[in-house]
Length: 285
Image (cartoon, rainbow, N blue to C red):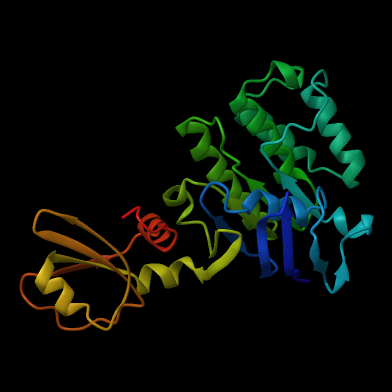
């Protein structure tokens, strides 16, 4: 039962935000949705969850249109930076409201996470710090009986300890109940080891969709003197470069292992560097 985004277009005041975006989200897969600020990630997620509407294109689940289909829409949950709960509503009431809206809630998990994160269930939403608002929304997202969970900047305001607890909880809950989870975040290296497939959005378009393992195995950083590196990488898919003094580093996509001449070093290209290079604007290097 795949979730299909097809040919989505969206503009605000004649400014194109999404341009013919098409993605097929597979079942029981953890995705990383990456993009610079303003790339269109949040707009895309809001369209998928029917919070806003596209100018054209479609979102379907198992071949059926999501718009206007309440049953199908309840199989999708979006956690975002937006605070949609009544400010005076208490945490435990928010859990009950979510249960009523989605037709169920994993109370055992919700209660366990409430204790693990030291979240006071009797506090009103307005009394929560930014980090604890994120924690509340994460607990809800992991406890709802939805098949597609979208997390837009889920660790906003979380300290290192709480971020680590979230990642471990995410892996455990996914193991207990596999479903599709899409994480949109700027902390790429923190999620690198749990993401199965990355989708990179830039300037309103999907520019790449590839597994994390494929990026790690095929990307390379090639360093040395300008002349040696330029000669060695001739004909390769160089996606960017840095330099300091007489030394340079070229970032290569789909690098094929080969004999490396003396004076040159080749190392794996990490995901953060890969993302930076493929989304770099002209003049930023």
